Length: 541
Ligand SMILES: NC(=O)c1ccc[n+]([C@@H]2O[C@H](COP(=O)([O-])OP(=O)(O)OC[C@H]3O[C@@H](n4cnc5c(N)ncnc54)[C@H](O)[C@@H]3O)[C@@H](O)[C@H]2O)c1
Ligand SMILES: O=C(O)C(=O)C[C@@H](O)[C@H](O)[C@H](O)COP(=O)(O)O
Image 1 (cartoon, helix red, strand yellow):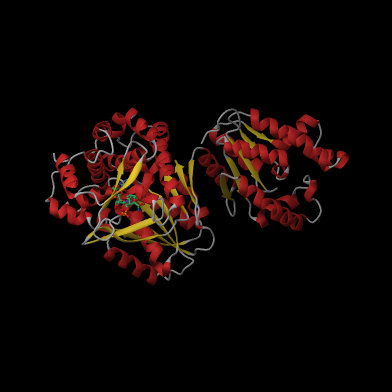
Image 2 (image 1 turned 60 degrees about the vertical axis):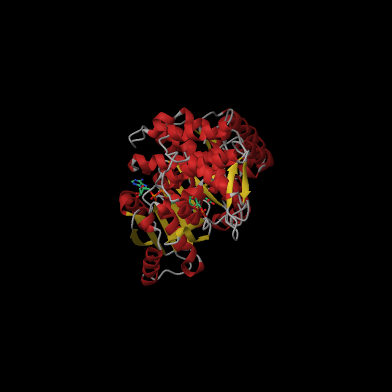
């Protein structure tokens, strides 16, 4: 995240005793950034202690000086870490400046302290004169008043319960380099993208869950080991469930075995599921969480590019049946999505390239800048090895993930249950899913969707809804990214039959998403079979 114009890299807010100064200083050492504490700046400017200012001139005078100091730092302390006093966000001018800073892309980190730990710390520190009398009671009262203000400002909340200042500083340092996409709606949550974001797992799961089912495939054992360690450290009882890889994990049999395990291990409605893996894991874990006891909490930790850009967010989950792809499923929002960029290191090239298919889809349906980014970096992207420097991963793939997740968020936030515009996210999927089924899931999803998009573009052109340039753009860009643009499978009748089970179909009518231009998706109802056949012929190899 970076703030537009001048301003700190991050502002740290929170109650007295939450460790803002200590944690901020440690985080500044880890990140090699300058650090300032607004209380110290006020004291430096006044040439005396805050206790002295309050005692002699009163609190209103102190707040006036503080307002001048903080408002100046918010504009001028470029790239530094700024810790504010607990009360400073309560001053209207400072609150408004903070909102403005946040609006410019600024990062505001709220250290959400444990009441016992923080008030005990305050009680030991006699310098905090505002809390000098009955510190525990006064702390609680202030917390009650201030927490809603802190929460309304925070771009990131770091609960500090039971954490050491060093661990908090590490989480804070990681939070500085993460990107956040917010998904709103009845159950809002964030998609966090960055190196090391999986350390947030405990904060998302909270204190309600006792048991956590950690669902993953063998291929990501190393990332699951990391998640297990984090969960155990946080005191959860972990049931590790390894499922078959890829589409073989998205079946009723696997779901059934997983439900059995939840029953044996005593999972109740307050327990939770964590899915670590590619899109197939996100689908199975999300479906199990949505169906167990009519729905329990879950967190997705995507480890493939495709799962990061698409499958892990949105709360749609599905399993396949013998009759087709994704025919059984549910809608249930996760508690959050942690796209830890470090996990991409082990992702095989073909799986990475496949993820570019769904990324391009987001570009075609809504955000042209995604297509430009893909085009600019096509050679490096298609040659992905996992050995790329972190600086490149955090610049190019991270940007693509953030932009694609933003496209997804725009649709999901207004149409969680897919009664309208969310269907645009399945651009290229009507034929794509049919290819996967006809090919017995030997084709990767992103590759099948790439061909499906070329088919949809051809269909649009045949019906006079777009020009040839758009079709050419599909073939050129997807081809440059190492994605397939043709398929010679069939026969047509089998493909048509599979497409009839696409979830956009209504009664006997097939429905497609086509484009009238980049960023201009529309529904196409019941197209003539002749046009479909012709488009199908044009995608033959
Ligand atoms: N629910 C949704 O909104 C949604 C959206 C898009 C796609 N999907 C589904 O997602 C699936 C495709 O996702 P995918 O491309 O991630 O496929 P996948 O889950 O099969 O993963 C691809 C391969 O990469 C491996 N892998 C994943 N991360 C790895 C890592 N970090 N290191 C080593 N190996 C790793 C997997 O084990 C697998 O072999 C499809 O089933 C598709 O239907 C769902
Ligand atoms: O989130 C959605 O909605 C999508 O359609 C995203 C698609 O990329 C994804 O492949 C999804 O699983 C397809 O859903 P389906 O309901 O058409 O099977």
